[in-house]
Length: 246
Image 1 (cartoon, one colour):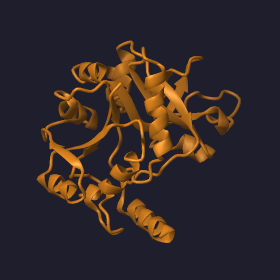
Image 2 (cartoon, one colour):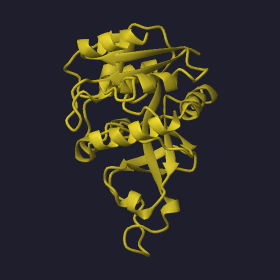
Image 3 (cartoon, helix red, strand yellow):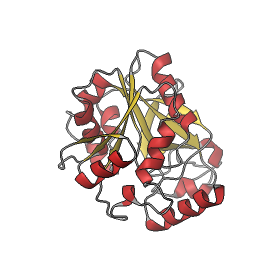
């Protein structure tokens, strides 16, 4: 089974313009992510998908494969679908470009979920919460599971709601969703052609499109959660951590 990782890299960012090319560590932010994914042995190739000539040129500097895609895509998933549409591959892994500290073992686990469950069309990763405050944070997506570890629903709200205490009970009873996905290529191309669903519009979570249309998303539990970079302040913290490790 051929597994390809694709890292969508849009240059424009509302909260942190040009963040994928931030370079205070001596390496581009996108380069850090790419190097982490390269450590995953089951992934045979990595492509960076962008809509920016600036990103394309930067990727060439550190030897990454980069392809240009349409600037009109509404999501990274759509961008990835275009990038792989003519590539001979069985499984596509969607890795966010702003996760420079992503754990290679987590990506490996996600790939293994697809390899070990050949009937699975889509998989993602989840983790436990570290505090009630995290559970209450609408910027951290929650997920509830069935007995087979398939996602039942994703929400920015607290799910499940605890009737015995104010909204959040024991935070160990909750799971957070990590924004990394694996799909069969055929399924990826299929779901990107589906219209945006009502739940997806309400929650602003594109994975709900899959559930709304009756498909399953298998989950894998990991213990380490890498911090994504959404703001300049988060990037500064990443730079400090990187410099301290050197």
